[in-house]
Amino acid sequence: MTRPYCPRAAAVLTRWLLGTALVTWRYLWETTPLHRGGECRGDETDLPPQLPHEAVDSRVQLAQDGCGPLFHRLFRVRIADADVDPSRLIEWVCCDFKRFVPSEVVDIRIGELREHGLDVADELVVEMPGPWNGPVKVVHRDAERLHLVTLRGHMEAGQVQFRARQDDGLLVFEIELWACPGTRLVHLLYSHLRVAKEIQLNMWVRFCLAAAAMSGGRPVDGVHISTRWLPSPGTAPVRPPSSAGRHSPDRAVGQGAPPTGGSGVAGPRGERRGRGSR
Image (cartoon, rainbow, N blue to C red; front, side, top):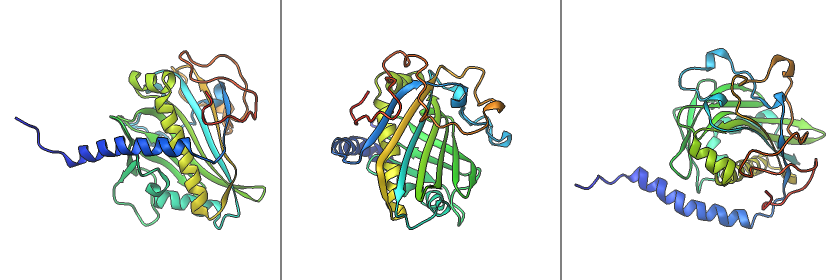
């Protein structure tokens, strides 16, 4: 007996096959400079921030629920001649999140939103290539920041923030992540084979460039990406109170070798890496 045809499964498979090929082609021909400052071991300031107590329930997938090292990544684009201020850009992210992601491989499922868009306790699912979806929940929103946490079933375990601010006459948009691979298979694909890691990089780079385009401005000096890592969070899953200030992973402090499997090479601060850099 044959199984009934599933249009949704066919759509996901088609997007994975055709979309991945298209993204790979665009990635190879991308002209926007991507600056990778090398990867290095971090410290306690690279632990994720404390979540509101009321936001954590049995469905939340925290960093300590994952497998392998904790990765702290920052994607930043500085935008000149923007037509909007930081709060307006974040409002657009909250109201039209789907418009910022590469639609050829990613789809966004969101329930009914209020007029002002995503807000605390709202959930969305990021449908990605492969056998994983990315369910997340909003744990904080203010004028210049949207903060999400992963839910059970996500390929990662951790948190992500989207922020915008003014700096020296420029609009700065940032995506900051604190996450461990969600399963051993993802750990293999992310930390060792680097496939999932490059898919993630492509998605968030495209998100940054979409933010620049939506703002009406232009990126200044491309997109900057920095990555710091820590061993599995264990019993220290959040940043201690003494490190309450937000830490920028631009400060490369090469304190050791990358995780086993070649998940990165520590480089000098400010080193410019091409897309093929490891």
